[in-house]
Image (cartoon, rainbow, N blue to C red; front, side, top):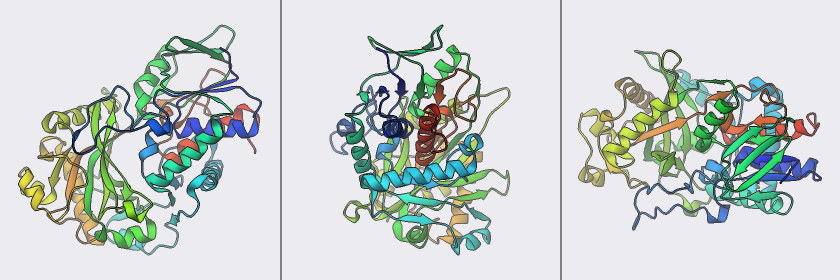
Length: 459
């Protein structure tokens, strides 16, 4: 079957590519292939009662399906070039910001109205952070919340479903280049051809992306992996920061090794959740916009970036090995009180039950020092004490640490200033490219390629 454009992956990059094509070139015949399920069918079987931990479903409902891994995230759109990827290195800083702001307007028009846009501009916390060897990054943050984000995705799907061909549970088995310069995508028993293909497979498609690049001889570069823990504490501890900034991206440089430790994905009044990537269970977090659905805790990640070049290049493999060790020791995610970690003892069910911080995720009490490399763990401990100076209570004994949290980044694919490979008409976008690492950047990359392939790049 022949199409004008084939999009592989219905994450933010794929969705916004399809949306923009529908808007500016409605005459085009577009196919959107998604390995997962429709949005309304994406339900994780973990209920905390009958099923308490990951059972490794064939297709993870949290990571795959319409909306991608971001569908059940906190719905944070960070409008900035300071973090979230290096899209600006390809399309320019001004264009990147303009497209992120454009995506924000689309979200607001599709159910996100009334949500707050936070900003670090003019905040006094910048000075307070610098006084304590911490650096607050600049950003504007639109917080949709998991509930509003789901609503926005639902509205986008309603607009797309009758305008383009969307096929769920359709895993792209292969991508080949034909002699006439067109492309063939195989999905099970189906075979599709097109002169233009947008690959937006996200992090869950990292292995597939590596195989495609290898088969098509597309150059790739080693990327980093972020390893650390998710911190959970009473929401009041960080309330002075979250009420003004919502999410504060704070970076700390350790004294001994000068490693960079950073906060990531802060969720005021949120929940800690499991995440399954290629069969490996790690930890993440999210929160809701509605006060009725909020918890009494705030959670955020503390991550240390590791990048390998020679002779070892497999950064993701390194992160996977640490996550697998955690899974082996704890059967999934491990939780430990900060006080127990500092006393050199494992947490047990009794100590967790006596904690003043009630865990929002049912995890296995254990000892994270048996999982995380000492250099990484030392950096995290330093960061906790540094944060305690601007948010007293962070280093309390009952602060909970969940591990491990690993942010896998795809190998960075060789693409040009238009996000296109050496093959004309073959674009690689979103987190699958290794270039974007956030909802805002991935969505903006989708808009960009849709405009480029239709000659509307200045629109």
